[in-house]
Each structure stands twice: as structure tokens, then as C-alpha cells.
Amino acid sequence: MTQNTDSKNQLRKSLIQQRAEQPEALRQKLSTAILERLRETPAWTTAREILTYMPIRGEVDVSPLLDELWLHGIRVLLPRCRPQEPGLMDIACATCMEDLRPGLYGIPEPAPENCAALLDVNPDLILIPGVGFDRQGFRLGFGAGFYDRFLSAKQAPNAVLIGLAYGFQVQQNLPHDTWDVPVHAIITENETIWI
Image 1 (cartoon, rainbow, N blue to C red):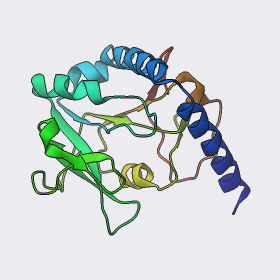
Image 2: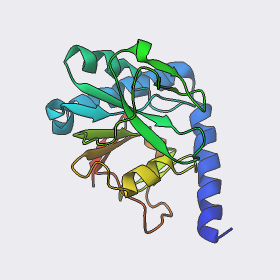
Image 3: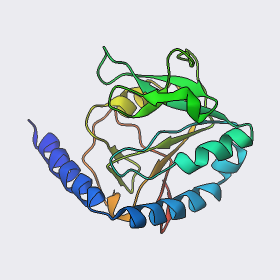
């Protein structure tokens, strides 16, 4: 293991532990504040197609946005992990909560029988979870590389990339690799950081 990998793993473990120790009521309060900030961005107000995620392990809870998006006719895209291909994900369109089923890691995903994988996606906005972010826009994930592979493949070249995080998850600098794609903005409960 390189020093870069060691430092990433140590930081990942620390941030995951901090996030897990947040009381649920606080997590919901902070998530609500983050979503309010998101709704104030031009990227949110003009988007017609949004790739988002279903929260796990204490991530910022974006699930309240889904019904709002569907109600306003916004196309909602969600990732689906490929069971036989670690680190790779497909993108599918979901039209309601009933389209979702627990996937490979127990994360709600668009059910393959109802929601075919899309070969060509071009969302206006991608909401990205993370274990940590730095002020240059680089992201630290769980380490499986799903988002790293998706973003580096430039499958959504015109999308605004917004990382959602609690304030303590934002670091001054994170170790990163040459293929890492920085987000355009990070939104926490206290600030919106445009990179």
C-alpha cells in the first residue's frame, strides 16, 4: 500500500465513524439545511434531468427530493451496481418509489425488470455522496470506485457535479489520483463552496 492509500484509508475510517456517531435527529436537521441550500442553486432550478443517489450509512438524506422531482416532471436517474462487475454501475430512470428495490449492497436501486439500464445519459445535475470532500472539489468515497469510474468515463460531460456533505466532512486537502474528477460545488449545512 502506498502512503497515499494509507492516508486515504485512515481518513475514510475517521470520517465514517464521525458520521455514524451523529444522532439521527441531528442528521435529519443537517440534511434538511443542505437540501435547502441545494434548492437555491441555479443548477437545481434549471435542471430537467438529475442523477441522484439513495443515502446509506448516514449520508446526506436526499430521499425527500424524489417526490418533489417527480411531481415537477424532472427525470430522476439513479445508479444500479452491477452484481458481477465490482466498481461498475449502470444508470436507470425511476418514475416512483415503487420502481426501487434493494440492490447489491442493500441500497435501493431501480429494479432491472422495470427500469432498463440507459446507454446514453446526459443529466443536467449530478448529486454526489461522499465520505469526504476537499476545497478543491476532490472526493473521498467508500473505496469501491463506482463514482470515480463513472465520472472519469465522462458519460455526463455537461452535468454540474455537486457533492453533498456535512460540514465536518470538508477537508482542506485530500489525497487524490490523476484520474479523479473534482465536483463543481460542495454544499454543507453552513456553506455552498463553488470550486
